[in-house]
Image (cartoon, rainbow, N blue to C red; front, side, top):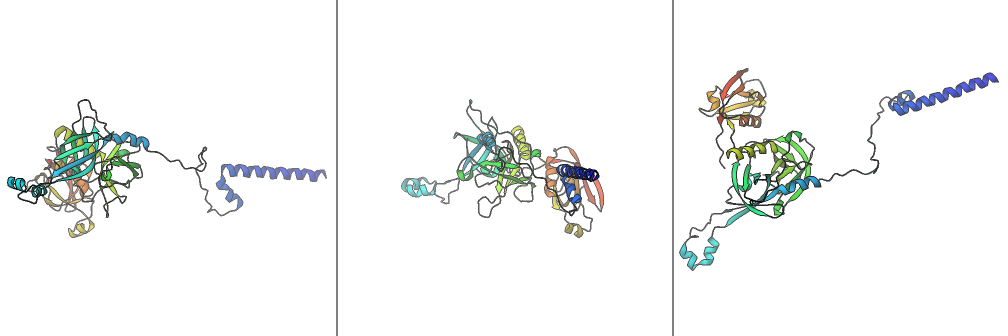
Length: 391
């Protein structure tokens, strides 16, 4: 009887120890429990985030009020007007005005008016906006967020990037609220952004969205394209307004939308702050934007083009033509060469090639690496100054 009781106590202790071990294993290594229990090895253990202690079933919603409050004072409404030619050749005839005033009034040249947005980038009165907002205008007025209005003039324009710098003339004691320029390197796809502007003339309006894509080109909008794509609602009148991050810093100038109806369809494009800053600094310092020029007529080097030229496929841009006597022609570049690098930077497509050339300083030398007859070749080219684009 004593022996039986002894075995029973040992059995009970063994069971207790086994249960304790299983409990510890299930708590610390739950992935081992199915194996110990003989369950299939395909069972997965998922990690789930613990709910917030204060609101177990609520989702935290961020407010962008501080970002909007910081950026909105620096975003202005831009109102422009220009004279429209009269179709009546006798509109300025003195006799017509004297004896037929009603007819002369109807024949008097009218003024076309348009609206847009702009961003104050310096308290001295410098305003960035799109070139197409003020193109051809002979009267420009900016309206601040607090309702004050003041005249502005064009300080300098860069049609190839669709940017223009205006100079407002505030009173001697007025300091304009300037926006803080952000850093494009800290912008990523999926980041929340705010678009601030003057849609349909309603005045300062804020919409939100995310960065849908970076480095958009091949759109045929500007000569130099490196757009930020966003789904923040942008409508007519938003052009020239600010695209800001959640800290209220400027990361882009809203430029255009893709639309089949004229309204926002969730695809908008903004000029990145890196390009805008460069244009702004050059215009303020020199009154114009200076870019490098090589006199190359480029073409994307696709597989079909490579086969047609009976040459190997490489990442680069085909030289379709050369400006006679231009920098590239003088440096030894030939038609049908494939440019793969400029100044040590790869040129994988036409927009990249144009951007690389534009970054060069006129008067300096650069190395242009090309493929010719299936062989790499380094050429030294003297950089020229890009001719000014026509408005």
